[in-house]
Every structure is written in C-alpha cells, then in structure tokens.
Amino acid sequence: QSALTQPPSASGSPGQSVTISCTGTSNDVGAYNYVSWYQHHPGKAPKLMIYEVNKRPSGVPDRFSGSKSGNTASLTVSGLQAEDEADYYCCSYLGSDPRYLFGTGTKVTVL
Amino acid sequence: VQLVQSQAEVRKPGASVKVSCQASEDIFTGYYIHWVRQAPGQGPEWMGRINFNGGGTTFTQKFQGRVTMTRDRSINEAYMELSRLTTDDTAIYYCARESDFDDSFDYWGQGTLVMVSS
Image (cartoon, rainbow over all chains, first blue to last red; front, top):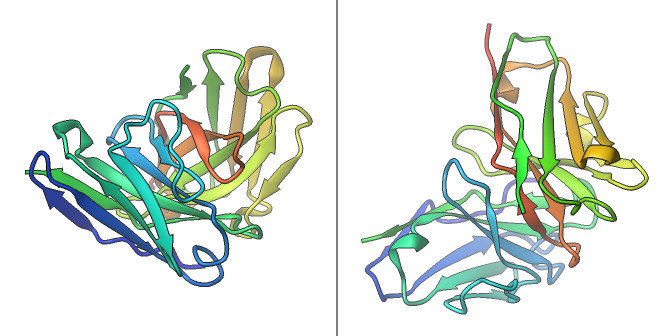
C-alpha cells in the first residue's frame, strides 16, 4: 500500500482559508467514511482535528472542517491563525492490513 | 492528559530497542494502544496495536516477527520492542490511543527518536 498523496505545502495569510487534499484509491479513502486528520507541531504530540471525514472532536475550533469526494478527502482551515502553522496528515482506515494508511503530509505556512 | 514516551535511543544494526509510553491518567483501560512510526522525510506508518485490557496484538505484516507489544496495566504503560534493527528503522516512534470512533487516534505521545547507526 502506498501512502495517501498530499501536497507538500500550502500557505495563506492570516484570516484566509487553505484547503489540503488527501488522495487515495477506491480501496482506502474511497471505500470508507473513516478519514481522520492530524495537526502536528514538530517535537510535540500530534493532535486529532477531524475524524470520520467531517467530525470535530471536542475542543477543535470550527475553523477546521473536513470533506470527501470519491477517493479524495480534504481539510479546510478557515480564518487562518498563526498557531495553525504546522504539519497536517490525513489517515484512512482500511479494515485490513495495514489497517491504517497515512498521508505524505502537508506543511501549512501562515504568511 | 499526557502520554509520556521514553527518551531517544541509538542502536547498532542487528540490535533491539524497547520504547515505553506511559499515560498520566488511567486512559488506557478498555482501549487499543497503537504504535506509529515516521521515518525522516516520510509520512507516518502504522505498525500495530495492543488491546490494553487483554493484551492481544495485531501487527502489520511488514513488522511480523520483529515487533512485540506489551503493557503493564498497574502503571498505565505500553511498550513496543523492535528487533533486528536496520538503518531503515531510524524514525520517530509514537504511541497513540485509538479513539471511541475506531478510525482515529485521540491521544498521542510526543514521540521517541530511534536512530540506528553503525
């Protein structure tokens, strides 16, 4: 299984929106509504931002939203803030080995 | 709530390494604890999981025969041991708790760097 494909980088000015794509296949992203997104500030513990494609855990700002169309999932960060600058990874549940497949990661820069 | 992992390790090829992950509160009981690694310049890679209650494990085929996952319920700690290390095993290793929603991980450790070098 190859990693899910994400753009290496994305950027936006404070207050703007940025959307990150996560492209897989009909065997992973397209097969299940089980895509999650993680925010990772290097050196710290990753943080769950979205689960089951578009659901936010308690405490995650509603500026973060998720969606999916076919084999591509997306994370949108609206109203960018300086603290949103981080690496973001998608993850798809597969149901069979290797059970979970992560994306290649996207570095979001707030200009 | 924090998951605190053990410190960085350096090993020679062929050696083994054991990484620990301790929860600051009793949040492991009733959950699966997963191990994920991230090699330099690559995305994360799922390695396997352990049922913290019963101790049952599932590993991805890539690591079958080389990885062991255990836990100590009395101190809320999980362990991952990887043997027959090669330089390709150089990575940051993370523990993570599977969320109530099955498809995601709601608590993560800070990561443990394992460097394999001769």
